[in-house]
Image (cartoon, rainbow, N blue to C red; front, side):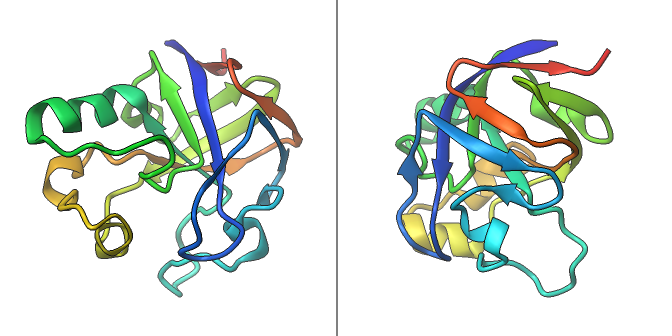
Length: 154
């Protein structure tokens, strides 16, 4: 399973617009430099159980959402940090994988929530259920760049 990175997005604070970047510094156990979750300022449950280092979504799922449900999301509208193509993210849960030279571990599927609906104004919960992306822990630090390979660790 190999894919590639198509978009990189961060938001400086909870609810703020996502910013598109050509590259970003990933910090192991922290997140993406400049992102709300790296500063623990994002919108999340207070249980401390969810991985928040980085979130990913498949470009194919965003395209499917438009084709099948008529719901258009632009780059970054999903509120996920990284948009991939060519790799089934749900199949990575529990596995280690590379984003360029950065090692990550997929922890769980990242389901859509009412906060996403409020920010986008679009009814995405049902059509993105089990297709809304992936949460992952960063196991190493380094620069992530557009076009980087996304591949399962051998």
